[in-house]
Length: 604
Image (cartoon, rainbow, N blue to C red; front, side):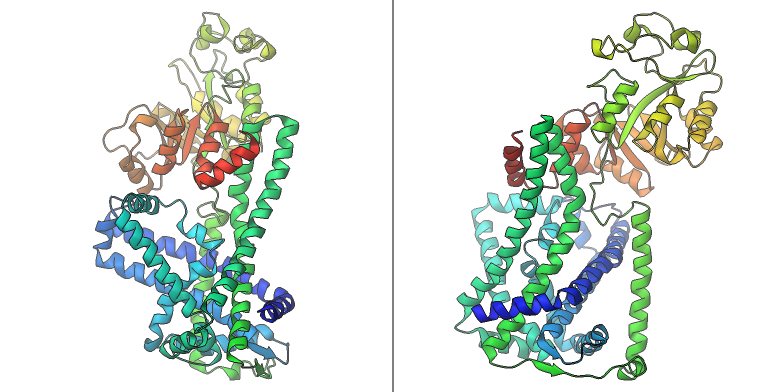
C-alpha cells in the first residue's frame, strides 16, 4: 500500500499543472453554465406548479406533477454526465502513459469523447445513477457539504428522521448500504474507461478485484478524505488565529466574530473550489494506482501522434458536429452565467442573499441621522444605511427624522418653518452622549460626499406637505454626486416615488408599508416594498419575487425575527444593530457545532 501511495503522490505532483488547470476550469465552467441553467429549469418547473420556491409544504405537490419530474430527471442526468466526463478525463490521464506530451489536452479530449459515446448507450444507463451516488463520497469533505447545507427541506426531514428510532435505523442502514456498494464498485470507472467494459461487466470485475481487500481499501480511501479534511480545517484555524489576534488588539470580540463570518462566507466557496479540485484528482489518482496494483496490470502506453492538421481527421464528422453543438450550448450558458455574476443575480462565491441596512445610520452607537452614525455603519460593514431627508423653508435637503426639532434638540419648531442657516449650528449629539456634542444636522449633499464608495444609502423621503421641490432636489443632488447606483429612494408617499421615477427612471424606488393587504404588488413606480416585519409572510415574499420585486423588512432587532426573515427569503433587513444581524444571518450558513467552536475561540 505504501508503494501505491508513493506512486500516487509522484504522479499527482507531475500532473498538478495539467489536471489542476483542467479541474479549476471545468468546475468554473460548471458553476457558470450548469448551475444557472439548473436554477432556471427548476424555477421554470416551479412556475408551472405556481410556486416561487420549494418548501416542506409544497414539495409533494411538485413531485406529483409529471412535468416537474421529467425536468428534475433531466437536470440530474445532465449533472451525472458532467460528473462522468470529469472522472473520465482524470482516470484516462492516470491510466495511460503518454509517451508524447504534446497536445495532451487534445489527446485526453479525443480519448474521453470516444469513451463518453459508449457511456451514452442504453445498456450503460446505470453508470449515470452510480455517478450521482458516488459523487458525495468522492468529494465528501468539501463539495458534498455545499450540496446539502442550508436547505429547509433537508433540515426538516433530518429532524423528523432523528425523532423516529425506526427511521433513524433505516436511514443509517441505507447510507451504510450505499457506502458498501460504492466501495465494492471502486474500480468501475477504471474498467469502463481503461478496459472498455460495459457497466454490468465493470461492476462484476470490480467486486471480483476488491474481494479480500475491502478493509484495506476502505481504510485507504477514508484516509485520502481525512487528509483533505485536516488540511481544510488547518486553513480555517489559521484564519481564526489571525482574526482572533486582531480581536485581542482591538478588544472587539463581537465585531471580529462577525468579520470572520463575513470572510468565511465570501471565501469558502473559492476555497472549496480549490480543495475539491485537488481532492478529486488525488482520489482518482489513488484509485487508478490501486487498480493497477491489485490487478497486476501495467499502464497502457498511449502514443497517438497528433498535429494541428490531423486532429480533425481523428474524429468523424458526426462527432465533430455533436461536439460543436455541445460547445455552443456550453458557451451560451456560460455567457448567461457571466451575465448573472455581473448583475449580482447569481454569485459564484455564494454571498448570503439577505443584505443588511443600518437604521438611521447606526443609531445604537451614535446619534441618528448624523455623519457619526453613518461612519459607524461603514465600520460595522453594513450593506446600506437608512437615512431620513426633509426640506427646510429655504429648500435645503437635510437629514432629520421628525417633522419637529423638539425630540432631538429641545427646540419646538417645525422643519418647514426654519431656514437651514437657523439650525445648521444646533448640537444634535449631546442628547445621545456628550462625546457627540460636535454633531450637527447634515445636508444630503454632505452625506453623499461622505458616503461615496463607502456605503450604499436607503434615502427615505419625509414629505410634510409644505415642501416645494423635495423630490426634484433629492434627485438633483444624487445625480450631481454620481450616486444613482449607490442608493435607493423610499417613502410612505407613493406620489413621491412616482415623481422620482419620472425625474430619473434609473433610481431604484421602494414603497414603505406599515401594513399590507390586497394586490399592491404591481404598483408601477415601486421597484421593491419595505414592509413592517409583522406583515411579511411566505405569500408576500413569493408574490413580490414573482414580479422581480424585492422585499425589505423593518425594523428588526431580535435574533428570532432576523432568522425568520432570512428563511422567508427577504432581500434586505433594516435594523438598529447591523453587527448582530450579520452575525445571525451569516451564522445560518455554518453548522451549530462549528459556531460553538468559533465562539469558544473568539471568547464570545
